Image 1 (cartoon, rainbow, N blue to C red):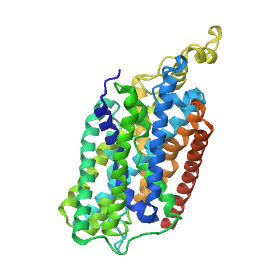
Image 2: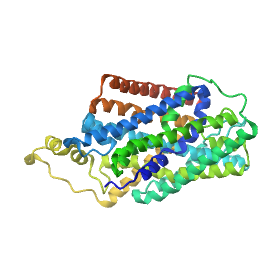
Image 3: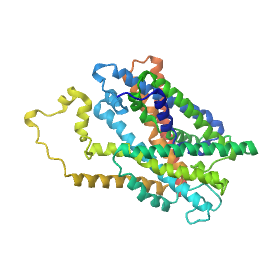
Image 4: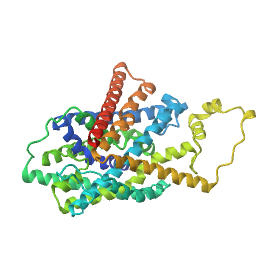
Length: 448
């Protein structure tokens, strides 16, 4: 049912874009240098174009009687690549991306809490090293967060999560506003910092920047569901254009202004870095409390899409059929009849497992998934590198690699446009490989 207005869709896109990932951009720009800021613009343009491509593909497929049911990223991929392969690829990277975000949230929580405690003289956790180095995520604080986040991850209804999302959005937007206020005050009072990190390194700085920028685009998978809800679907292009321009300005300002005001930012959380630069500042303390609460409240919202896919594939959801049945429904009658065995030889259906057994399996599965993300966060205490690794390995596939490749298979594109799509996908693949390699090298050096 289409009941979203233009303004409501615009608000959803903007809120879905701004997350804790945007607060790591000063670190990313510091690693490469301010002179590489145009690279951020190019990545923004590629992501924005790919979002428009997704809407174009969906609307084109909807106009065909055989594919009028298309409503999500997975549906588009299923049509372009085949039901099993297309949906499987999208599901895999949705799971990896969302669990990567959850890993980052553990690291964000530990980094910010450690810095807050250190600011008040509780040095057991250590917000940074003895030389005043970058803020770290102590493994002990990751474990402290585990019980609460594992409990929140047991929530199974999206309606129950909605209030968490609303409060978290208010907190993160307030946090971004506080950062801008602190940074602008510093610039007006003291001017630009000297020296500035103009050109730091193309390797590994540039691949790290690539991963961090793509990680900051957390809204890719919500584009098509929003388009499906918009009263006038033709206005989705305007929604994307306005929201991408607005978010692009926020990203550029967040990446550049803290670096201009304070010089190189060495940690992945600008809030934690400000806590070290401006100790006992009331504004910074409020900022870090807001970010920490936002991360806690957003965790189950980000965890939900990943665990929903896993549980559906394992047949552990009350409100969704097992994988095989859901694939047959999505592929339509013709594909279903081709895959189903003849009625005479069909094996008798087994009764579903008992309700308590299914509930126990779900609870253990969710606990294991949350525990795995916590273990990864605890093993890599540098937040910026965790974000870079997750952003480089997971985000490019959904943001800039799959959309142009799917477009070449579903849309009638001229030779020039096909070449552009292949260029974007190839650049995304190279950036993904380089960013992943650079992040792993940096993590190995840090842990050596």
